[in-house]
Image (tube, rainbow, N blue to C red):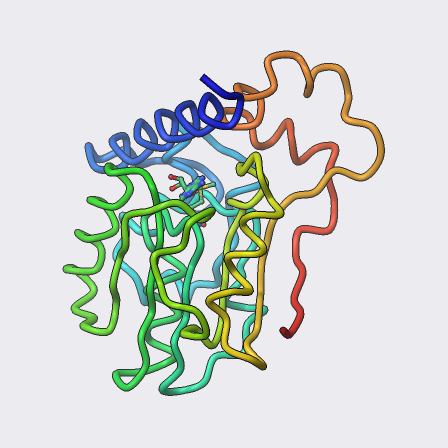
Length: 224
Ligand SMILES: C[S@@+](CC[C@H](N)C(=O)[O-])C[C@H]1O[C@@H](n2cnc3c(N)ncnc32)[C@H](O)[C@@H]1O
C-alpha cells in the first residue's frame, strides 16, 4: 500500500466517523455550534460563519462544519455561475454557494467519504435547494469536464491530499478560462515540528488544531 493510499484511507475513516457523529445527533459543542463533528470545541473549525449564513443552512450542516475559514466569504459568486467545492463534507459551503448563484446557477460538492455524502444529501433535502449536486470522487480526479466551472472553493481539504500538485492541476483543468479559485486552507511555514512528523497521517487527520498551530495564512484567492 502506498503512503498516499494509507493517508487517504485514514482520512476517509476519520471523516466518516465525524459524519456519523453528526448524523447521530452530536451537538452541544461550544463556540457557536460548529465542530461537534470532532467531538469537542475546536478553535480552528468554530465560529466561521456569521449568524445570517448559519440561519440559511440546516443545523446539521453547521454541526458538520470542519473547515478552517469561510471560502464563500472570499469568493465572488454571480447568479447563474457554476461552483465546485473540493471536499464538501456536510455541504455547508455548497448550500451557501447555491443560494448565491441562484436557481440558474449550479453548486457541486465533491467528496470521497460515503458518510459525508449521505449527510450532505440529507442537508440538501432539508434545504430544499434544487441546484445542488453532490458527487462522489476524489479531488485528485475531479469527475467533471474541462472548462466547466466558474469558481472553485475549498475549505481545509487540500492540506489532506498527499499529491497537492495533482489536485491543483485538476482544479485548473475544470476551471473555465477566467475562472476563480477561492480556497481556505492551512499551510506550514518553516519546519514542521517533530510532533507533526511522528505518525504524520494521524496527526494530519485527527488533530487539525495541532496542524494549524504551526500554520498561518488560512485564506488565499486568485484568478485563473
Ligand atoms: C476538513 S473536512 C472539510 C469539509 C468541508 N469542506 C467543511 O468545510 O466543512 C475534509 C473533507 O474532505 C474530504 N476529503 C479529504 N480528502 C479528500 C480527497 N482526496 N478527495 C475527496 N474528498 C476528500 C473528507 O471526506 C471530508 O469530508
